[in-house]
Image (cartoon, rainbow, N blue to C red):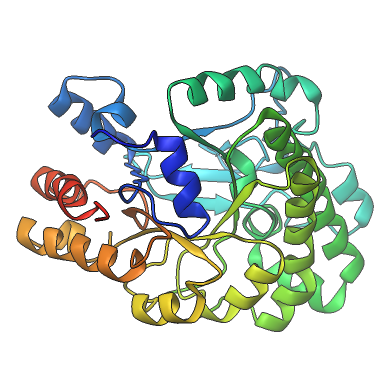
Length: 355
């Protein structure tokens, strides 16, 4: 695969240009990762699959919070934010439990044991990691918790019912919760920008297969301005930083607002619910696109020939004239046969070159 280095390729595509070939952003569920490592006989799956982007995140907390007092059930685990989960037998699907669901005062929100993502030590050495990855030719994306910028963290702490109630009937509570999250994710975004990442990965799953799960009016009032604050904070440090926004589902109605706050790359352009011809025609002069391959349809359930045709169609549509970073529209799950994964990679090799 002679030609440009990955970083140059991604930067050109992320700015809607036409590099030597379509860059790739390949993501796998952890057991699929193990299968792929076994197939290639290599631990470095990014190199083996010739992916172009490496994700980085903050250092682990030295002072992890204990959220046990927020849950009465046994078998609950939690992440750094305290979002409770009871996992299934394969640690794949989870029931969510909400530590702030019963909070009735702003003080309870403010006194919650928030993660120390605003502490400087969490980002020590990040610039060295970025520089090392750049030296290897990779594009670097800052993701981790900031990839769930505000909405997902908020409802998974408060519950979706209570969060929406707050938005309508107790704006002080809603503001307190959202602002505590944004405070930490703004610090994280700034740290990524200082470290020299190429892409800031922001987002929230705000859509279903058929449309938005939050009205455009509520999104514009509560989420869009806070998303803008995170992007603006990072761009004050690095004005050239590319911003990638993720939401599964039919995100169509929010695309103009995303462009307004500075999003450059839309992910994952889910083919089961976002028309690729429409989105390229409507927004291809203002947005690049990341992903695009159907993990609910062709990749798991098609034949290798179907997969190859699908890859070619996505490249011909979303990648017409440039502006595409191709990959699955979610992590490739265990229901995807190995031969289909290999067909996907081979087809990207075959059809991804620009004349």
